[in-house]
Length: 111
Image (cartoon, rainbow, N blue to C red):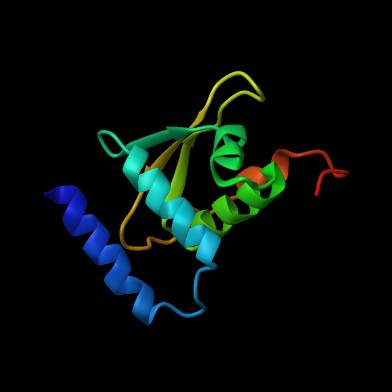
C-alpha cells in the first residue's frame, strides 16, 4: 500500500513541478521505485542503460537530474563495472545535500 501511495504522490507532484522533469527521468524514477526495497534501490548505470536501450551517459545525466531535483539521493556509489550504486528514492522532492555533486569526482575529460 505504501508503494501505491508513493506513486500517487510522485504523479500528483509532477503536475506542479517547474521546470518539468524530462520524460526519461520520470521513467527512470518509476524503475528505481519499482526496484526499491526497504527505502533503497540498488542499480548499476550499465544495467539501467541496457534496460532502457540508451547510453550510460544518458542514464548518468538523468540520475543527476533526479538527484539535483531531490527525488533520489546517492547512498553508496558502486565501483565501476563491479557493483551497483544504492539510491534512496523519494516520492516528493527534498533539497539536495550541500557539497560537491557526486559526479564532480570524474576526471576532467569525461562528459
